[in-house]
Amino acid sequence: MALNLKKKKTIVSKIHQISNLALSAIIANSQGISVNKINQLRKLGREVGVKMSIVRNTLLCLAIKNTAFECLKKKIKGSNFIAYSTEHPGSGVRLFKEFEKKNKQFKIKGAVFEGKLLSELEINQLADMPTYEEAIKKLLVTLKILVAGKLIYTLSAIKEKKETS
Image (cartoon, rainbow, N blue to C red):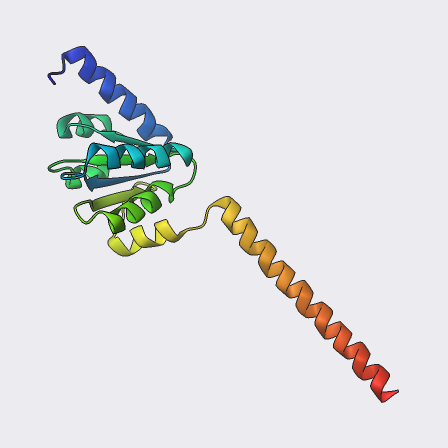
């Protein structure tokens, strides 16, 4: 499909706006993945606030110019599928990592968080980073365990005191 100059400018503008609002971005090679699988991935992404696009390399390079994701230019070669996380920095990375496990042809090329190109280890750490809700749940579980532990300690101390009296 041939794009005229107006459509190209619209695409670049849209991606640039998303780039300015996003917390992190990840780029992958989607060559060989069926359209149905890509559409399923996009649907999952919409549910967690991840914006995804397949954009021509030159347009993508123009769109990320003067943004925190400009360092991704080094990774833009071949077929590219880019995802921007807008609500939680690890959302897009987590989605792509899960999708990569199920689809061997899908290869993550790189990710950016806070203007820095991430290593493979850092990408994994970002994917494992809990969301706000997950962190709150973990905190509550920890607090419950602490409270239950103190209760058990107190009850056993009362029992010991009664036995010695």
